[in-house]
Length: 308
Image 1: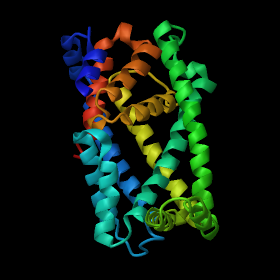
Image 2: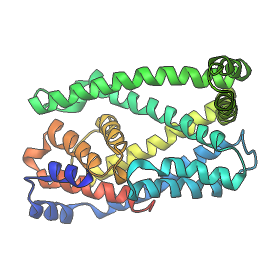
Image 3: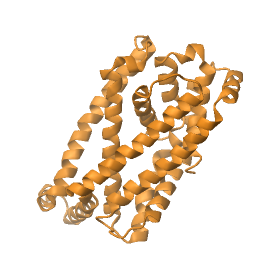
Image 4: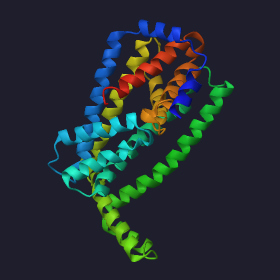
């Protein structure tokens, strides 16, 4: 699938123009991208450490850093994003906590991340000037309609899941009683396992029940995305794209959705997201197609190689 997507998005682009664009790229800005990407790994590991503290108050930063990198590295080289499950599993085994509790911390992370992604995605629809002049083209308009539908659907799902997690964190006993009632028609063995899983899962979302913990977690989430925003702004400027940083909000949101595709490291869809926004919406595919393709290739490598 990754190979098919790469062929689809890179067909018709001269490799000579890509090589030329690589030679013209600003090496200092690309070096800054590497530093920012590594900094993002640090801030995200720190964020995970914060959400894990209600479970393991003395958890060292090194444990969060180690398994965060292992999980993402596996997802970068293997399909199916199995690293997402490997990360909480390895940490649960090391810290001797239930896997469901460790898994819940990852769910909380993803809820906050998705909130940020949807907020950034909405900037493109609220402020069309950020998307460029090509949004009326048939190809662009159809993709934009799809993105709008995905965003609305994700917003609805996010609202429901967020309410459930908040209820589980703030009214744990009541939530567990509801689970017992809902699972009562099931065989006793299955019902007891679901109840035990939910109880362990509730331990992993305790950070949401603490005002101080929720604020700290929200702050590190914003910091992590701000670092990524700076990284993508730097890589765009490295290839000579004169864009305002406010345009990068929508750009980063679309790239984040591309990474969610279950190919190794989002390969193919990641490149397609960059080519669509920078090339089609911003109009650089006509004037500088080689630079757009080179930017997609290099930014993916600079995002994935350090973590691997």
